[in-house]
Image (cartoon, rainbow, N blue to C red; front, side, top):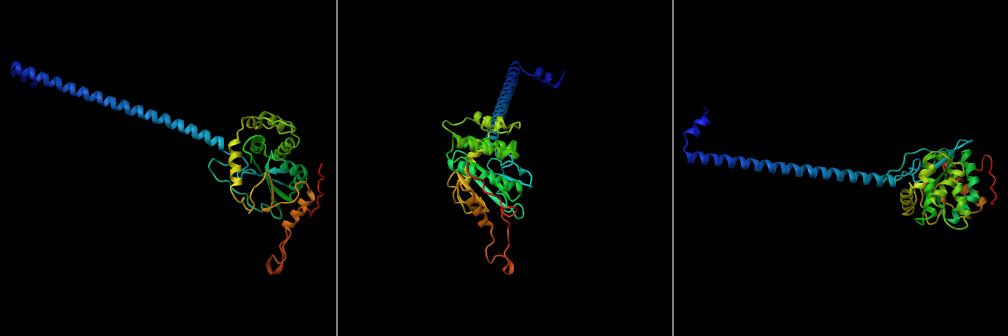
Length: 312
């Protein structure tokens, strides 16, 4: 017989009932505490699960926002840099600009004795179309020959419409087929210049770029999705918020050419004036250099002198 049994046997009937009631009370209390613990655990688990779901939703939203506003490859400066080796024109590869990051301005003087040309273009702007129609062929010759680099910055000053869609299309080509950028640029400019009414859709622009010869995988889907619309809006805001990088100039219209940081303000459809401006910008200033010796930078017209391309 155990000690408990002996104690129970020694108790009176009344004492045994009191003892049994106390045991029952203790068991009820323990059960109450177990239920309370289970309830607390259930609440904690539910809260953790809800927080986990919210974290996943927040991560998904943030990822979507980052993807929607991430820049194209090869445009870390908000522009694509093109240069040549005498025979071919190629784009300078760069990483994409991440959402919330600041563009990295292209260093002036990328190559020795090379003119730095920077073109800001709103594809819906008639002046931009006129400038490129009159001057782009000549500029492309200089770049291919290695006399100059060309950095093109697509913007959309109107905020929507053709300017936004065309800038997105240009960014898609820069990201997926960078060496074909000028081909797409020329087609987008020509579409604006020849527009007789209406506004091309993303699908129209994808077909336009493809018919121009840009058929690399990924370009069409990128254009039709409007993948870089968010980046175009951000790049436009950055380009218009003050002085442009490596320059005191500001972007006030849909067409702006900077040569070594100096803005061109001459006739937009006169290649001869463009050549004269470039020559003036890069010509040595009297008295510059050490001990009175000027430091010369050959003009694109030095070897040989390019002939202005007549305006069609």
